[in-house]
Image 1 (cartoon, one colour):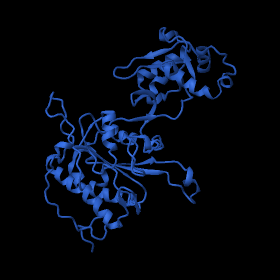
Image 2 (tube, rainbow, N blue to C red):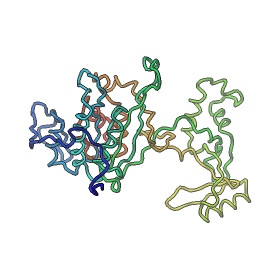
Image 3 (cartoon, rainbow, N blue to C red):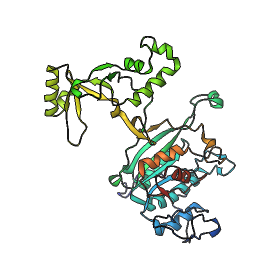
Image 4 (cartoon, rainbow, N blue to C red):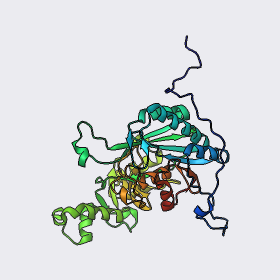
Length: 389
């Protein structure tokens, strides 16, 4: 009979052997400290730490002061690809790699706040094992998502590989406690213009009841002083770029008409819909407290392109909610970031920024125990999203 204490777990040779860690004290090297010699204002930040040494010992040194205080952990551990790189050896025996990762994940779990988030960047070599390991430490119920991240394209030497060409890495997201997790709403740029929005309010400045509608194409052609007929041919490759810019500049006037779900709207909305069906030439509006107003014409709802615009990196663009496929962050410009040469080791700043955007707010504590080329710190100073430790 199986013991009631048995549980599903990943096992490996040496799993029960844990390193004996003695308490360590972090000593600051004054000649390498870049902060001012004294505080000028109460807002001066003297808390950031850059620690050089074995990361497990460093994590244990942080344990007493920062247990339960770190809001976000981003790590990019060795992928264990069985290769030797210039700056580190990535060829540990599988069971040794699992033990090293487990010991560090245990401490990171302890350091995280109850509403904290862990991001782990990994490739497919150890992906399956790492998921099971993280499920064991964090609890499967606290697994938030497995993100597929487009790391490259099937070009160059990759294109001649037989079989499936690998172009993705993965970001594993875990919450310390999913019931306490409160992520930010993050949007990404929508691919191309939404061409369903094909109408334009000609006299938007007038009272809504008097609005007149023309085609988007006509409005665009009039704005640039060219005939609508043959406009695509006239502008050629610039057509889509120019009309997309026009749509963004006039987002509150670019619309589409959509048939509302009559049974799903409120009784007040149904009354306006019925009235607009009886007065097809007049635009009618339903004002709603705490929500955006709804406009109808001929029984159809007027949807404004401005309702699609989201603030992404300080710019309003057509956006959509963040998904589990991050294929809009490419690594082709990676060699230009940070001025650091680190082939096969650097990660895109935009990737780490997205993690911070999702899980942090200003003044949250961030920890990266596999700092590599220092991208995490660079992202903090470029976007001022949080403060790293």
